[in-house]
Length: 309
Image (tube, rainbow, N blue to C red; front, top):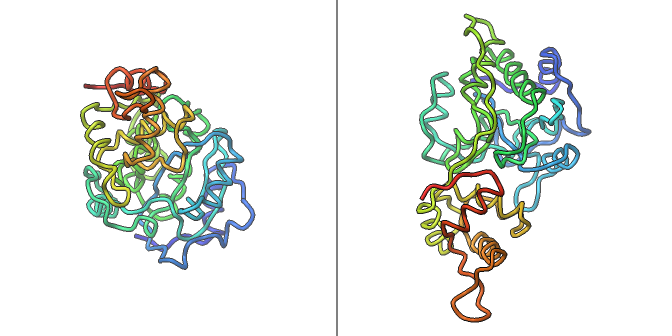
């Protein structure tokens, strides 16, 4: 628990850690403080952006998009390891998460599995978005991983926190996959090696891309049960993996990537089925949009996820 760093202290902490920091104009006063408090802060949360291109990514995280105003984080960590500060104060990055995870972060204990979304994380965490497509295939350059390590260590050092104060979005909010492509456990080990205290020993090598796994039966249940539900509840996290693939195929608008298998997701999958040559039961009828094993495996092979039936 800590009072958030001032803008000057945040900038200084990052630069002392050896980071290349880019100050995006207006970052010191860009925040969402008018809708709720920021602080006390308890930790650092790491995300991936599902975007390509640093300029586009920084602009999106600075300004947000319809339905989710910026800033969407405090800083963007680019592929080249540079850190672009876009906001200071409350930011729309964490959303609601698990109270048991928050208690574990505060106590600096290993976090339990997240299964609730009831506590405001925008108040409690620094957020850093990392430029990556989030498909399990887009590489994480060494420079970028080192910057994630250094950013996290800088904030832990400034507040007297340990590495267990750093979590991924996927460890906070059910259904979120980010960051996808490296282990947060390995990253915390590397962060810990930078902080005061016993040396943890030789660091394990950072792993290659992790291929997400989509369970066909759980996906089919979400596609069947989610469209009538109000709002965008997430009933199965694998839906978001499929949504990202449909977006990359040009079959679905990115703004609908939310992990909820709603009408637009079903329509997007129907378009994928039609691209493969499937159609409805009657002439002229669109494909039903219900994922089958063959169509899902073909989508997975193109976009880097495994399928279990």
